[in-house]
Image (cartoon, rainbow, N blue to C red):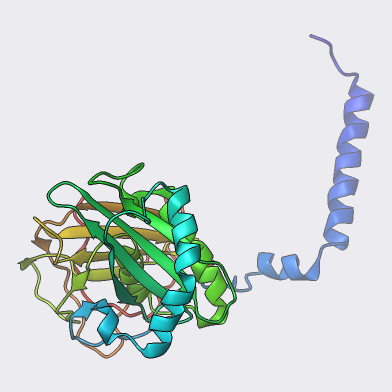
Length: 303
């Protein structure tokens, strides 16, 4: 091993001391204040949905038959049929064959879009279903979301399909500032676009520990921001389904998971007017200060 001469080592040590002294003299006052014990300001995580309260009534998405729709919406559907037919043809949905029926999906989270579910029923195991999205203000494109073709999913099941998620995000971007701000409404709207007839509720802000019950609806805020929205669709057949939707801090839907809902012990929830959200840190991170949000039920998701 090569040895360093003593004078060289001494010179290096002197240089190091000089650098340390110089750094101390030219320290940034902001960082120097941190070293002196000034409090570190901890910023709130970016949230795609603002805090808010919800009513205790059941949460549902309304479906309307054509005769129940407004005249303006019926005219909008009629004017868009050629575009719907062209896009349905690309997905090989056979829109020009057989008899089709449709219903309107009334979605408060997407007010600037007319959402329709088209169905052709040729009997058992031979149904074709898709969702159509029509912009009301002309700011956007007619879109078709395939759900079922002749009794089968075209790719992976529509609720977890990347194509469905991408279409939903595009529709929300077209909404701009009008896009819904409520996390449960947004989650239910996605479920309806993906083929469900979601019903959640009744929603209660207080509960008792160890009371077996289905997890109705909740939102978690990761330490880095974004949101994880969970709700139980009690109308799904044959069993209630737990939906888990993960949103980015900017509000884009990243992934969706569905699984059978199971009864679990509820958390103890304060009954004050502003219950606190549970913010789960990611591994190796410190939790951040909790924020009051629209906490509707407190049962954790079944794992």
